[in-house]
Image 1 (cartoon, rainbow, N blue to C red):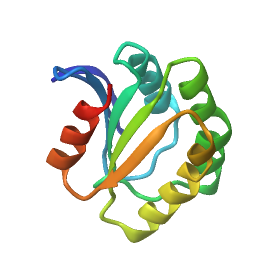
Image 2 (cartoon, rainbow, N blue to C red):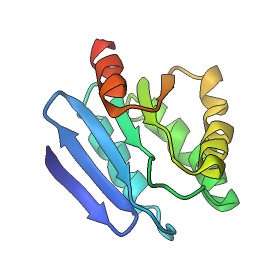
Image 3 (cartoon, helix red, strand yellow):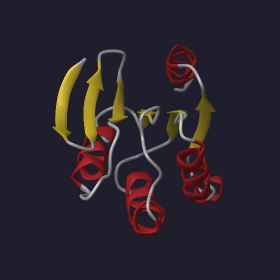
Length: 129
């Protein structure tokens, strides 16, 4: 896997299987650089991204608004985001925050699925054309 960007919030990788990978680290996030770089890499990887949230803390209300109103629409319209495989967070509140954000995606041009297992998430993502 090739590292594209990394900071204290997590890392963005180009997976050799042909999709973008966003891996959250534990701890608070105070910047949007991780999401910005994930969006740019997404455009190069057929609109597919695996989002590993296992160690993620819940999105703050400000982050939820940023993702829902800015990042997600831009990722879909400008970067071709079509398929998202979310490896769910261990923290139940992080799961709820993600579900709140992704509710908007139900009415968009993207398909996403939640997984407890990275291998299952990868297999599903690879089946998406």
